[in-house]
Amino acid sequence: MRVIVVNSGSSSIKYEAFELEGLSAAAKGLLERIGTQDSRLKHRWLSPSGGWEEIVETRPVADHREGLSFILEVSSRARSGSAPPEIFAVGHRVVHGGEKFREPAIIDDAALGTIEELIPLAPLHNPANVAGIKVMRELLPHVPQVAIFDTAFHQTMPPRAFHYALPYDFYQSYGVRRYGFHGSSHCYVAKEAARHLGVRQEHLNLITLHLGNGASATAIEKGKSVDTSMGMTPLEGLVMGTRCGDLDPAVHFYVQKRTGRPFQEIEGILNKESGLKGICGVNDMREIESRADGGNARAELAVDMFCYRVRKYIGAYFAVLGSVDAVIFTGGIGENSAVVRARSCEGLSALGIALDEQRNKVIAGGIAEIQAEEGRVKILVIPTDEEREIAQQTVDTIERVKGRDR
Figure 1: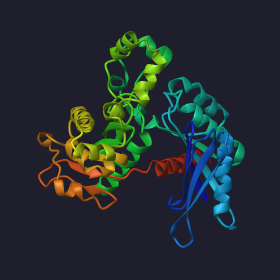
Figure 2: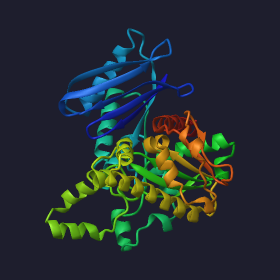
Figure 3: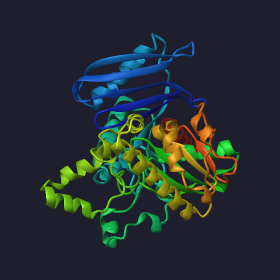
Figure 4: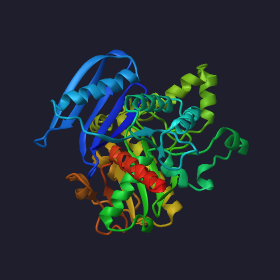
């Protein structure tokens, strides 16, 4: 039996299938450019010999219905005549759960309706998540489906951390508050850190840094998120690939008055043309570091700004937690950029955060400890696996509901 994880975006669908026993990956893939004539599906599966095989196909895919049907068709064909495995459940990544969902939810008509009601909080993400859910419920009507929310892990933040200093009615009437995102990743690496260190989560204080094209930091106190850098939307916080992160809100009005551009266009600039890309023209940290090494001043500025903002949040979250057992780097940049890890930890030795340069440069895969001998705080590099975390939470949710029904 297998658990399928679906991450449905506006023009793409990412998916992964796990064996129920042990949750080992069995197949995965990505369908891109939905709504075009050259939609492209890359599907990989684990062959009986233990190696990964791959199919790449291109065809017109009009919408998510055609996209998910295409994925199921190619997945079936890749099994080369073997009987299709029984599907235990489908877990769906849903970006925004608002205050309605503090934990994963079995998807029924009521839950789906509530997710649709939350679309105003995530108009760029929840509609695509809903589309994927609806299609999979129709294609697999007898298979349990579970929604896993990016925001749920951060629902333990206290009011002092999640409120904005705005008229209170904005919160009561419109849900304006900080929600946080990347919850599955922060949750996963926190559990992996506890396992690695041989300490129960409720005995650890952690600062987790999910650094990729999207980036966020989280303060985790005894297993619970107590603050996180993203806010009502994923725009707040760290410098990101194309998002600006923390910004004086008056900038929006100033730019609008000076340029005459509509606010909708400015919103697009803040989300898609800012961050690293806005500073130096590209958002791939590998290319930016290469340009910086070659003397490009704007690329060097982009790296410096990115790391400076991370370092500020480490210091802030140290103050929030009072004591820190480990700082964790994850995500595409966090796992792969020795430069970013080193520069993000510069000047923090007074807090017990000291990085060993040689350990930092040589990461062999898996979990790595890169703190210096004199460092009181562990510095860990932990590969994230959001899909596996979603699969695990999907299984746990179904088992919990079954236990409650018995």
